[in-house]
Length: 394
Image (cartoon, rainbow, N blue to C red; front, side):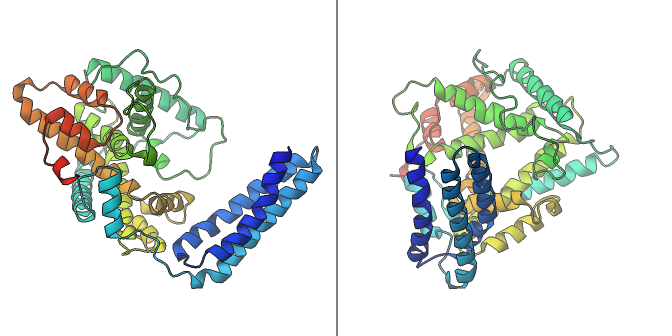
């Protein structure tokens, strides 16, 4: 308790020091901080209420912290006009970060070209699907936690069966959905009046999102936990496996659709795959243009609303704020998801051309997954022997 009290006492001074340190502040980061002040204040109020009955002295310290948070938010609002620094890192730093930290073979300009091409493709395919399905009734979304829970369970059961019967990759005994089901879904929460953007799609067809999160991320985590190799098996700094992780998980949504995992489900579910993908290309474009200083945070948010399918569901939402904050704070995050998917497909093509008629999907996937959580450029080099990307990195 004494240590906790000591930490609480230090917080107001940290906020006061921040006012002195922010001599080159960026307006966009101030906006993001102001957004969070109300939430932080509410959390400290909950903590003070919880402590009040048994530790009144600690509750008083928490109240001081709450007041410091609110005071800092007010100070930001009063001084935001002075914060003129650029929030994005700029193209040169963006390129350095991708090349030297993430062993990524593309520049900012390359990424913009790739993402725009993907956006062209995704929107075209979406509109073709909509026309194909024009006489079909809309998919009725789930309307309760129980319906949502059942939908997720059915999707997970379906994709596990599909992976095995479709011989997509070897499903080891430890690759199960047991520790995943309900991990982030909020099944025990009350059914909200308004849902985050992606739920407006996954509540109609949950299979693509569950495939992304479970078959992509959860199974990657289970494999990595069992990887005893001294470099590949450890958790490395700066999340250098992020593009491999997000690109592969995102890629599974659409690529498994082409492999057939939606064939026996409502046909309009294919539209959901492209709708979700279209928002991801919008986020990636906002990412690139914020870090090149073409967009401010507010301009990026407006762009995302105009760019995304059913953008009216995004406008003014906490989800939109979260997505745009993420891409400013974590340089390249949304771009990496889209271009990482393209990297995976490039590797797929290269290996298929090398092997010709000997190419086997399950063998290819098993080899890819066995490479571990390392940058895509290294996996491609290891699997194909091609050095064109690697030579540009060092």
